[in-house]
Amino acid sequence: MGLKAIFLNCTLKQSPEISNTRALIDKAVKLFEELGVESEVIRVVDYKVKFGVSSYEGEDDEWPLILDKIKSCDILVIGSPIWFGVRSSVTQLVFERLDGTYDEGDPETGQFPLYGKVAGVIVTGNEDGAHNVAANTLFNLTHLGCTVPPNVDSYWVGDAGPGPSYIAAGGEKHLYTNKTVRYMVNNLVFFAKLLKNNPIPTNIKRLYEDALTESE
Image (cartoon, rainbow, N blue to C red):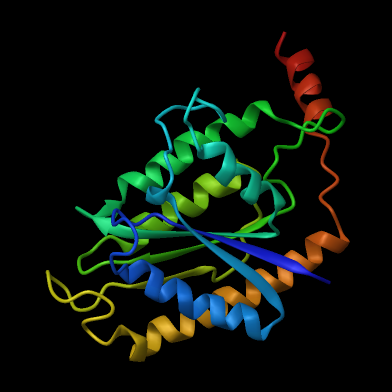
């Protein structure tokens, strides 16, 4: 069974600047490879992604290029740095654009395009906020249709208070992060295989009509 993982690196740094978030993503990519999963990493700021809440915001908008890759994957992992205790503005932009997928439901079932995909999150920073970023990001992904298995967040923040970032601080040797990234990868692969063999049958369209009738 060929599985494809897409990582959205929501760093604020354009290529080829070093990204701490990418460093942890690369560890997950290697673990996925060992399990036979192909990965692609997309650094969102390297694309011209316009602000908005639709899937296409006009000429020169390159979001549709990213969205096509998301729609074709089995596993979606959002990688976000922490800025001022919350997820990066690029991460927020990604979710604002993903809002447009609500209007692209399957003609028969009404399921959103992210149904049938499993999702996880990677967070790096040198300050508090990892739980906040992971919680909001995973919650948003469930609303968009993704399945979120257990233990699919991996993060590194170092010691409390400002300090060196993931690479400079030797985060590659950090036990908690190395443990959680393994939990994340293995659970994502298991549930991706599960969903590929057992698609979610929920007919959102019919359930919405039932709710509409009751609400009249």
